[in-house]
Image 1 (spheres, rainbow, N blue to C red):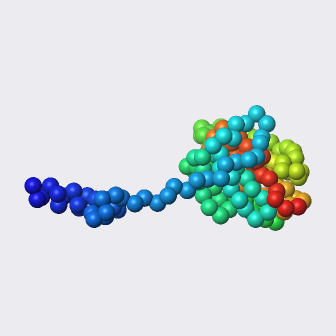
Image 2 (cartoon, rainbow, N blue to C red; image 1 turned 90 degrees about the vertical axis):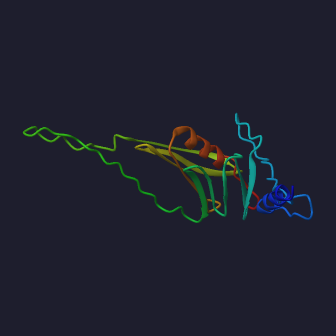
Image 3 (cartoon, one colour; image 1 turned 90 degrees about the horizontal axis):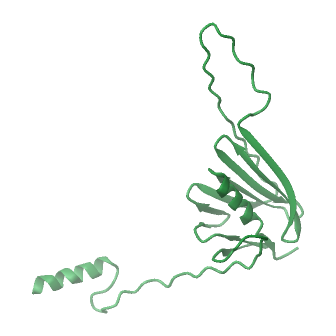
Amino acid sequence: MRYPMLGALVVLSACGGTATSGTARTPAPTVATPCTASVPKVDLTGWARVQARGFTYCVPPDWHGSGSEQRRGQASITWGTGQPPVRTASVTRVVKVRAGDPLPPPPDQLSDADTRRFSESIGGADADLYENRVGLDYYTGATWDSMSIYFQGEAHDRSTAELEVTIFRTVRFTTK
């Protein structure tokens, strides 16, 4: 009988509890501040508000991060102040040509890309937004020139890219 009790004490100790107290202490769960923004036709229930200097924005419960970056799997958004950094993307095209056949003409424009740019008022300030697809990747962004703030995102599918744009639409400025 002595050995089973010793085994139980070892298990409690390995799990972070103490053998003498009888109860394991766990850190108090961090409760996210609920999102108070509203976006037409989007249910933000369960979204968390992220506080930044001079503004807030909201993220879905399965997005996590700190500082100026939030992630979900391979998707990410970042924000910064000033002018956004320039991003470049390229698509490689492989063309098979039989010996003796002429080479096809070069494409006039990137045929495997879509670009969408639009403007709207977000958080009481005019924002320029974009959602671009290059190959299988999506690049999103929003810029508030009057506030010198920008967001950029990367996703690997259209629905996540649209979710990133929804995140941008939750921005609320606390100072003007």
